[in-house]
Image 1 (cartoon, one colour):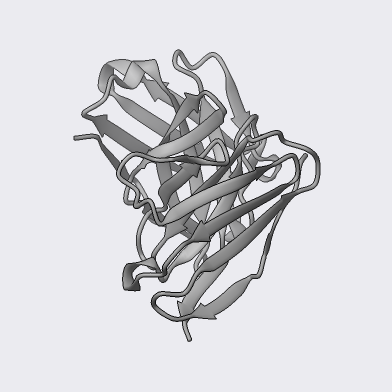
Image 2 (spheres, rainbow over the protein chains, first blue to last red; image 1 turned 180 degrees about the vertical axis):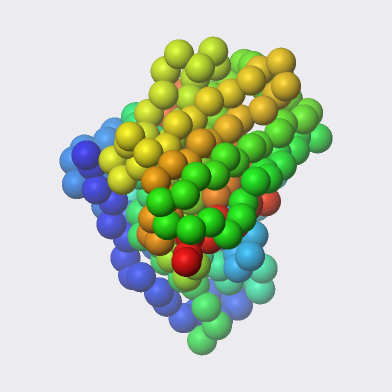
Length: 107
Length: 121
């Protein structure tokens, strides 16, 4: 099975910062990569699918890029509601493996 | 408005069984794959199983193969997860989600609120 890793595992940032989270697949996966946001006690929320397609209703400050094995989620200007944990996910087959997550908290 | 509502979570002893349900509204349930995802307290997300529209194709994460069974009843707009031989490491919040095929892969666009399964003596 393909393994997913994320870096960093956590980061501290301030409102207005540009934040970048990286996800790496153990094998090439084209653009079969999703990103989710999860806040404590809540279900995950889909942000990006197909590596770069913004899910309907999601703010344009979120963007995704990458293909092959290396992917990036960027938050252009961090807002208070963006402090959360972010997960990448393999999306072309089962198992639909998630990355271990990146927690974004207040600096 | 799409809603997915899980139920059936409970405290169960190791080796016991439990059946989770997920009832859908606001979507044509029979047209979509569905999936279960779990999350242990303080841990990350783990995909558990999914099922196709008519229940003829199912996939499982290795750690639950032979113990868990995913099924659905399209007439009742319901998804199920039968969990047998439960272990402490199965303790988690279990979410159901719609497993949607897009142009570039599959993604989970609608989620339930989750139901807590605790395996403990």
